[in-house]
Length: 276
Ligand code: PDD
Image 1 (cartoon, rainbow, N blue to C red):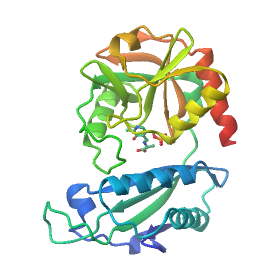
Image 2: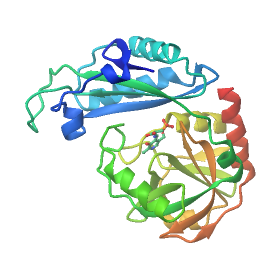
Image 3: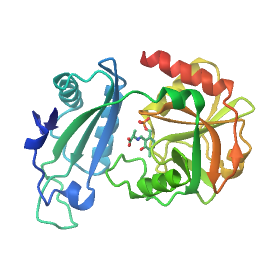
Image 4: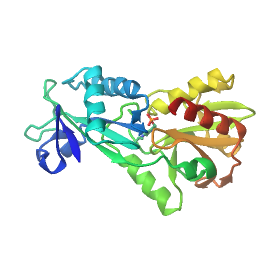
């Protein structure tokens, strides 16, 4: 098994990370997860466009341009003969004597690995339970940063209550999932939080909104409340790894049950068509 280290493919056990790498000390870095289906990546260019925009927001110096990132990532997929699974690429600000203050000209470290996995088809069919809890994260959730404690704590809480995903609200406004975007359908209108600093603008989200427009489904990119969530006709989440996954029950700060509806199914199938 090979990993990406700068622009080299090396054996996993041969890749060393400096104790004072800023990713390791401060979570000072960014990442992307891309899914691979039958050896073909989905939306790789879009993922690296977002990667580059995350880097710019953190004033990180890019060692490669977008096409080179894509090339290196495709190369890793090939090197590991990955058929179905995910490829993870991250970039930290690199190593220097530990100091909160970063210098703008640091040499960033790019690493990546692949993992074989199948899309969760059973969950796509049957839906999941979600756990509603407070969004305690920072105010730059638009950056796909390595700092994920607010996300991991929520995910643990959800799992402890037998739920597959945590969904988050800020003072009663639903934002997104711990590792996914969140949608409701009410009276045939699809609604999801606008792409601002409070959510990550998912690549899957962007694909779904495009599919909705193509299918003539009315879309509202406007914040909705926990009350709206409670009264929704359909609820689903999306991400690179979960695609469109229906929500059948909510627990935690909300107690609700949902049917898997026709709009959810239509978008789910539309996305699968784009992928396969
Ligand atoms: N997570 N919101 C958050 C907080 C996420 O972590 C993710 C993805 C998404 C969906 O984005 P996309 O459609 O581009 O995957 C939304 C990835 C899969 C992860 O951290 O594993």
